[in-house]
Image (tube, rainbow, N blue to C red; front, side, top):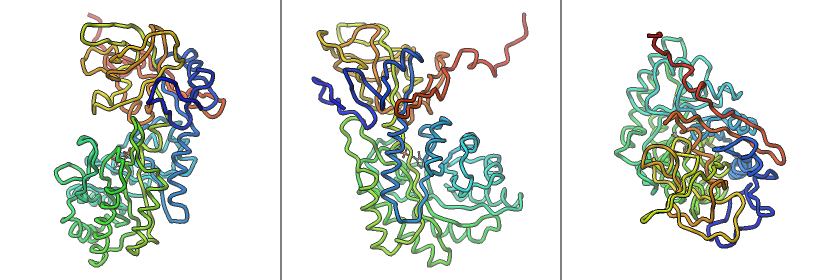
Length: 432
Ligand SMILES: *Cc1c(COP(=O)(O)O)cnc(C)c1O
């Protein structure tokens, strides 16, 4: 894989690179896929996903463990199937995700259910299929789950999500393990919560969990969270409630723009040393990675519609928008943007790359140096996580198509959404 001369940030993630001045995913030309399927188009590398998973599998080799892919990162069925067939369980956050998970063929015993607002109906649905664990986030939820399970003559397997009050040092909107956010049960209330859970006839305590944030690029916060959780496990077990598995959540970051998160296997080498040193080396470990499994395995292809140079800003108007790629608008996130076939002999200009949606928040990249013409194709990199799964129909824009590449083989895994698809469930008024 060659790098692109003149662009200092053109180091591309595994699975992507230029060959004869064409951006490739594995052995397939992205330009070819764009002309075949149109744009905007999401394209994923199977090898990149399985490579990311393999780093966790290496890191946890020889330990009892379960890797539950946090499917909200990208819940397209073929993506789920790819990871499930490679051995993953799934971390779900809604009844809809449970249905997708089952449609993808997951063993329900490998499903864990996270989220602060599970409804009674979702609890019943999950109990009926026999999921592996409910990650409970409040005392009130624990009591409702107990009641629902008793009503069905079942015992719900539960883990309490602990808020370890550690700073993940990431964006405030994706930091979840500090006091003052809505997730988890406060550290000081955890032991009492477990004592209570152990007395509930509708509950069976199976584990403990935490999840401190997302796009974490340092090892320190994970070590801090681990220490806090292990302190709690000692306290809970001293109170007579055995803890089966310990779930350390997800949140490992990816390289969007020179970010340097630890590799999953290196991270787990450190964490397992700490686990062993504290005498918990034989415990069953659960993790819930999302972004780090799929984020850098996907790109979004888009066509340049118009160049709009201006006095203060130059705008590059492309056919992908905030409804396809919501992260910049939501978190001011950065996605690298590169041409599918770099041009020579064209001046490089600094552009704000924006979509057609009627919002000033509809931008995809700011101040990007690109040499492009109308009709050129661009790849928005690192678009495998929290893009398609967050896509909307705002402006009655159909959601993009998706393609999964494996070596030389490209498979359409989602057809482009039509306008008719979008209003199928609406009920127009009778003819006037
Ligand atoms: C979103 C989420 C994850 C996954 O986070 P990533 O940053 O994508 O790895 C894991 N666990 C829970 C409870 C989550 O809400």
